[in-house]
Image (cartoon, rainbow, N blue to C red; front, side):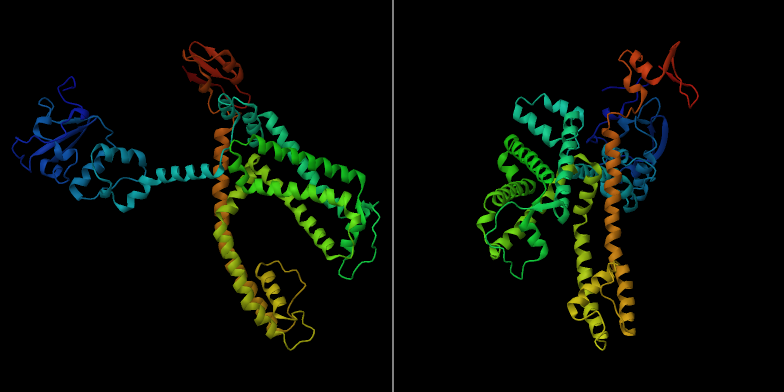
Length: 491
């Protein structure tokens, strides 16, 4: 058995089980426990009050015959609370102590966690809870890949298809990926810009197609007739075509290079991309080649025009790709995702408020022919707009009783709609602060300490000294900066 120079034994060598042949120790006899030089005095009977613990299994054979104590090489800061458990039956720790260290001490002294007082459990498990929360947040953020991560992964990447997939899916991996994502954002903005320009009548020109039927039914609006009889100008049409070709090639490249094509095609983003690509090219070919074969008075053509407009809105989902390369957009997306219950609660509150105040305002204004609340559905609209404090001004009460209803409606709207919004703000602050912490840890430009560049032989490399402005003088590294005094770091 290993012993110290003075004959005392280390805690690892203390016998775990009591000697079966040893006579019971007198309960009132004192025993001295030496914790790394700090001595604590207790009684054998007190130590036996917690069965199966390390202290309860001590015997007289464990006492150092020279020092007359039992030596343990542990941190004496935590032992008073451990020893107090044997006297009081409840385990209390100061809240300024390290939670994981407390749990480590409980594990060493073989003390069950159930003895820990409820007031101390939160501080003991605070770090573990925070760590679990950070792991959950990291999983929600997905892979915010740094260049070093991709360089490590690239070693296992032995095919061109895998390299293309990593290039497209990890926009922060390399300079080339960042530049491609910049081009992607430019083309996305170009799509939105051309769509906006194409809706301006002065930016369109007469269609060269000869339409056989020029009589329009009454259910066609001027906007519909503009889209049917005119087409975008050459520059806008070419810009839209180039952007469409770029996104088509991007979609096809992702499909071809996907590691698991079946799982990729099941993803919502892939479904939206394919739907947009198919609808976009079908409508483009139709309007270019088969538009003249249709009668402008047919209901099918009107349905097709509406369908084309709806498919064009799918291009907005192309912006979702930019979420992966922007931490701010990722924070916003995760905030909305985590706040789904609060958003649903907000919609329920607005719905209940509309069903309550809409009819009340209608009947309060029923005696006035000049009231803008002509029916209960308009009252629903007014209630929602009022509770959300938007106030478009298209509908409003005009009678004294209606004013009272409006005051109550806007007051309750401010109170009840603010409750879920405060929870959403809390979610945003949580994700935003974690994103800042993650960015600080992953940013390769941040040099956390000068000693991180030290060589194995204990000195600074010439590159490190030049980078940090260090000067080696007789074993002391001096740091010279313009804004601060010289600092010395002992090697």
